Amino acid sequence: MSEITNQKHKEFLFPCVANYYKEPLVIDRGEGCYLYSKDGKKYLDFFGGILTVSIGHCNPKVTEKINEQTKKLQHTSTLYPTENIVKLAEKLAKITPGKLQKSFFTSSGTEAVETAIFMAQHFTGNQEIIALRHGYSGRSFLAMSLTAHSAWRHGGTHIAGIKHAVNPYCYRCPFGLTYPNCDIKCAQDIEELIQTTTCGKIAGFLAEPIQGVGGFITAPKEYFQVAVPIIKKYGGVFICDEVQTGFGRTGKKMFGIEHWEIEPDIMTCAKGMANGVPIGATVARTEIADSFTGLTISTFGGNPVSMTAALATIQTIEEENLAQNAYEVGGYLRDGLLDLQKKYPSIGDVRGMGLMLGVEFVGDNKTPDPGIVANLFEETKKDGVLIGKGGLYGNVIRIAPPLNISNTEVDDFVGVFDAALSRCQS
Ligand SMILES: Cc1ncc(COP(=O)(O)O)c(C=O)c1O
View 1: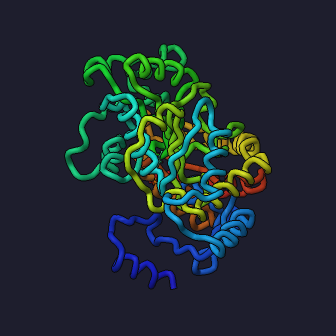
View 2 (view 1 turned 45 degrees about the horizontal axis):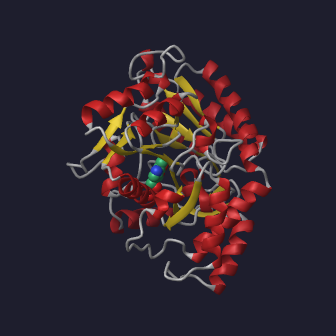
């Protein structure tokens, strides 16, 4: 059965719709932290549909609300206000940090980023944007231009006026320094980047608190405190991309940037916000939101079904204290991974926060080892565990299960990961 699906996938979809695994896995259904293939095999899902299934597959608390909503009203467009678009915007104003007060809804993270960049340019009257190397922003032309991985940037010449600062990648410090004796040079360097490669007036700085596609690269705790004042000095706003890090993922806090204790001017959200229903949100300070009153529309933005799913997801994260669970269970998982690091020299770095943990694989002298990651993928799949990968060199395993897992699932995962790793040692 799976073979026919895979064959037709090749025949009728663009080949760039690439799947994981040598023999792609045709998924039939999901329940909690498990997925079931068309062939009836059960898999422990430790990637959650790319950090999207925040509270488990087909969580009844969300699906029941979606079902009710689809019977009542599925679509209006933004031409009419609905109760739930207002409720969700009000909720975001309450739970996002600082002065973020007003929302614009779309259908994806890419659109959320597009909206944020446009608003930053419009509000400041400046054009140039600072983004980070190893960052990922989506698949539109602008988002690819913001992205700093050649493998994800297509189409040759990109949108001008985007400058990429070196990223806070302590394991491979771009300056060859060692934290904490580095004076956070990667953040300080943004000033020279602005002085030398821009006109000296910027619209904004776009950064993920933890770089997702980049391989869960986690900035040192001082990073944003140093970087953001530089951005402000040159007229820019801070756009925090919480597409991966939002909604409890990083543990304890609702949003990743809260760990760095700095307030963004604009925030982008998507993925885990609605547990798998398509959504994007750009949340901004009132003055920024109010600066643009021109015509614009998002046909599916604010869709009643997406709004309902997001409200139910956020409510569950809050009621079940899942940010705290991500912190506790994530800590337990991190300990398990650190134990494996002692056993396997190929594990160069274990990083991340909460239930967003990355494992970077290396050979001698920290040489990236994407080969072991490719093998680990096939081996963990055999034992019924799904993981993600990332990093500029394709040598990072990304682990991001639903936030409501327990230590039991972590034990299962670590056991499989350990056994698969032992089979992958050359
Ligand atoms: C940090 C970040 N921003 C933006 C996006 C784009 O989101 P989407 O794929 O929903 O368009 C992604 C997707 O992975 C992301 O990780």
